[in-house]
Image (cartoon, rainbow, N blue to C red; front, side, top):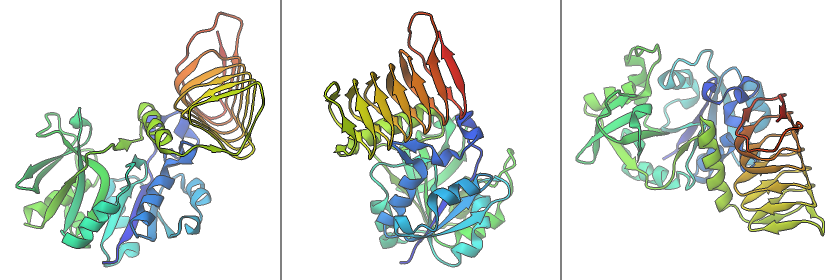
Length: 355
C-alpha cells in the first residue's frame, strides 16, 4: 500500500511565546535538531517519502530549513493554509496533494521517540478506515479523548470538561482517502475550527472501521517549555557520544558529552548527557545534564543546567540558569548582586541583566 505523509506545521505557537514571536515552533531545536526534523525522519523510516507540509505564516522559515526534502530522503511539497481553522481544515487544504492515496497525518510539534514504523506496518496490514494513536495521560481534558469498546473506537471528544476516559489522541493519524468525505461533511466546532475528532466520529457513526493503537512508550507534545525540556532530556539520553570539538587540559567532561564540529571547551566542566553545538564556546563555565546549547553560542563564567539555548546567544557571569529555554541572539549578563538560580523563557534578541 502506497502512503503519503502530511505534516502540519502551521499554527502560531502561542504556548511558546515569546520564542515563537520570531520563529516557527516546529523549528525550536531539541538536542540541537529542530522538532520538525524528527517527524520527517520518522515518516521516511516508515517507508513514506512523498510528504506534504502544511504551512502558515512561518512558511519561509520552514521552507528554508527543510528545502526540497532530499536531505531526508524524501520529496517535500509545501501546502499553504491561509488561516489555522483546524486539523480537518488542513486535510481539506491538502486535498490536491493527497489525491486518492491513504496517508499519515503527523503534527509537526509531536515527538514519539520510537518512531511510527510499527504503526504504519499495522495500518498497511489491517487497512482500517482510520487508525489513531492513543496514550494514557493524566489531565486528559487538555486533549482529544477516546472511548474504546471491544477494541474499536466508539467515541471521540475534543478537550472535554469531564473526560470519559484517560486515553488521549496522540498527534499522529492514519487515514484512508474516505476521510476527505468526512471533513467535508462536518461543521465548525464552537471554537470555530473543523475538528479532526469530529471527522473521525462521523466515520464511527457510519460504521466505518476506526481502530486504536495504544502506545506504551513516551509521547511528548512539545508545545510548552516544560515539555520541550522533557523531550530534550529523552533525546539526549538516546544519542551516542560524539567528540568533534576541542577540549583543553583544564576542562573535565563527565558522562556522555556530545561536541559538534568547531565547538571549543576551555577551563570548564561538562556533565552529560549534554550537547554543544557547532562553533559554540564554553569558557570557565559549568554545563550540567540535559542541556542542549545550539550553534554559535558563548557560555562564559556561568552555570547552565537542564536548559535549551538557541543560536547566537551570549550568557556571561550567570549563576545559575536552570529549567530554561533561551532564544536566539539573547544576551544574559550578571549584575553586581549575589548569585542565585534563575528560570527563564526568553525570546529572540532579548537582553537580561541578572541580580
